[in-house]
Image: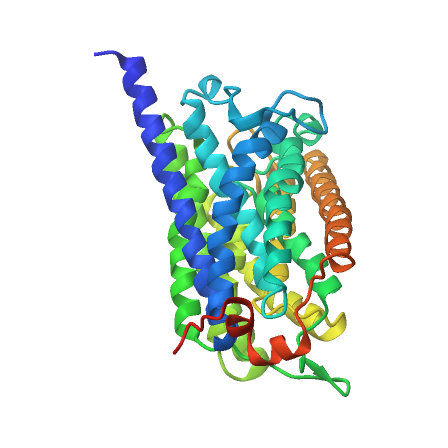
Length: 407
């Protein structure tokens, strides 16, 4: 028996199955965003999540993959049309297996933005900015950390993408929602009016699907089954952080509002998942539970901050879940890292890793905000970013698509 061929086969199978699980997260995002928004915009939300992956597949294959993993320089990869350069063999898997795994991550970053800008964005504008995110914005900052760029050389550790994927999507969502403005009726006479989603059932089902998908997202990032102990530990840390995030949000909402809130608790689970993604390979199960618990608390106050203080209307809490907790989780590596070649502050590693992680978070934040401002203002002042008041009030399903989700 050829042991090398067997090993390659097993690793390839593992990466492709994990990639399929990450792809399934598109369904989770679609259901969360649809459930947390009004029924009159359901077709629009589902359509956007579908096109995220369709468009992202083509543009990442065309240019994005090369910009992210091409040799290039510390800032940007290289133009490698149609992913012809082999970046997989050196990792022990075929290039196309590695390409597919990275593609599903790119699509995840783009789809995060749609939730924060839901119910008021022009469909054509959405298609354009989704393409640019998957083709240019995400691959370039991804190159900095995962493609051997300047942050990788500095020592930033983001194993599965708390910052590379989630924070990029979250910060772009922040800028997009800011440029777009709040939904009609959200803020009136200095008061905040809640606009509840139409189906907590869809939202809950979406979170369960995302939770399942994360078992491809984080453990699959090993790209190998050779270290079975590491893979198993990542399963446990990922799951523990999610559970702790949900429990923390449950407790906070119960104490703060007098009743436990399911919709916020669902975001608490997601916050725990996002936060553990950077350090899932380096922290202990106990460290993961602490990180997830803190993320579950943080997401409640982050949602309130954006909603009440800065008055940025984010229907699904994408900025707080992905932007804030992506950054938080990346920084927590500097405190809780204990294995896989890393030691954080709490384990005698000093402050070097912590400072490095903060630099990485700040650099990606600046990149996403600046490019996001350019992108969204360009769309706003050319083809337009927002639908008319009449279209928004009557629903995007009918005016944008002529097709309602519920007949």
